[in-house]
Length: 283
Picture 1 (cartoon, one colour):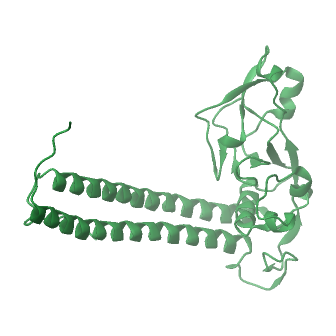
Picture 2 (cartoon, one colour):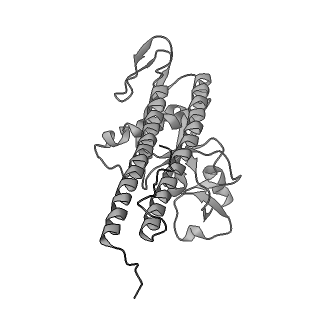
Picture 3 (cartoon, one colour):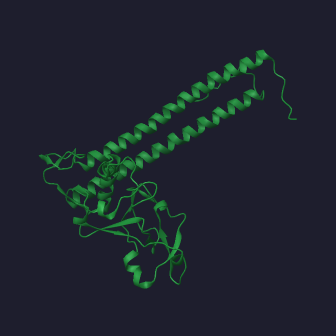
């Protein structure tokens, strides 16, 4: 039988009152940090949406023809993805293709997160020489999840690994000419957050974003110089947001540790709750 300290009823009440007051205060601080994270995400989404529709561009505007987007600057083009980009699916995986003489790393749906390609865990598949040109990725290719847990989730491949391929559950989007896949990435972010694909599919749960659905999707396109300038602004803002998010997340972790430490110290008698205070945290 585990030994338990004998504590009087009066002392138990003091401990309970102390912990109730201190954990409530910490929980309020934690909720404020959570709200700050939510506001950061809301501002980021608004920034992307305003950029994609050219809200800050001076001059005349015209209807985009897209109900979710509204008007755009008059000199911007509005066109289907297939007009400016190739859209291709990767190689189908089966048990036999996981073996062979030309095993190469490839990306799966799980590797493609929003804005980030995670290469920490890569699977291997056989890509013989006659298939390598078709399925090999190039820096700047935009990868979009066709299925999986989040259809439409996208990231730009930046070439961290020299030779890498992709499977069928991913769309590979490559410019036909001088268009920015990063600009198209931010268009997809805005469209996905506005639930464009779900509305078109007349379903609250989208299980696939097929090639036939993706190719005709229409987005606004300023000239390449404008695209690149807008992309750089968005990337810079995202980098600053990541720094703020890291700070807030560290504070959340500190608050959780502080809460647990107070509980442990109080119930084990490490300090006298009648004189102790947990107010060592800056609000």
